[in-house]
Image (tube, rainbow, N blue to C red; front, side, top):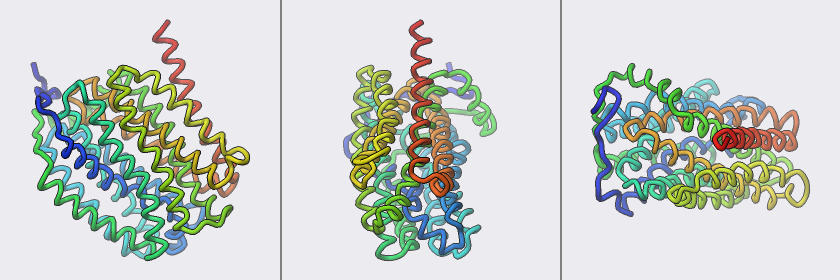
Length: 400
């Protein structure tokens, strides 16, 4: 039986071809990269626009806040309207916003556009539930993990690419390049992504109201959202602060910082591994590994040799591995809760993650300016430790 907020959609028996999985992964990576191009070059953008050093990280945090708002108000529409048209429309707005970012001369306008860039880059979170819908149950974790590896590579490769382009052509060229990529993505979405028309008959207002119902109903959603929000706050804190440390303490150029960030991309191998572990029923054990690994990664930087360029790169790889593993495990768990509501479940889950990321990014500049790298380590360690404590308490209660 269907209700206004349920659906009779079934996953197609043939699932997704390898080529389609690769295409989904590429699109996800290219779109989500929009959120991270500014992260390693805020110290180039801020003085050009008249922003102070302590406010520079607002560029990153506003982009992530915009993304969180898009997740909350745009992504639920994927359970209501035809998915491909919705993704194309948001991608067009993202491309126009990136073009505006490349030309604006004033801080306030740039910050507003940063918010819009984040808001309009959420089509990636419509693609992932669509892939989960198309994939057969027995391989859903593996498919989601493989596509997430593309998304996470987009996050990780955006930083070195941005640093490299900015070093040779200026920071505005980064946004011109990104606008061009989005134009290509619009063409790819229009020509290759299959149509999907949900069966929901509810209004948009009813769909938004159902978000709170889903959050109250599913304890697993609340738990995984909390774990990943805390982990992503630590992740964003590290990757917003570490370019400052590398430039000021170690004297690295933007090109050298690009190489550093490229090494961090090695952590993307966690996504397909996590998907396979989830398919084998090992979600809890793998989650414990991820939640322990994240604070350990930060603690390596307390003293030499962890506090060196190579040591910080090891921290970045381990932290990325932990965050990505936990993210995929969480998505696999929430997609199993209610197949008809995957768009909204994903919206709630990812909103919590990027709210955490926005907080971590917003704190990075001020924390680094006033307390240095040791302050970053202290907060970066504490956030995943809090997630680990909650995880252990939940596990204890479930066994009791």
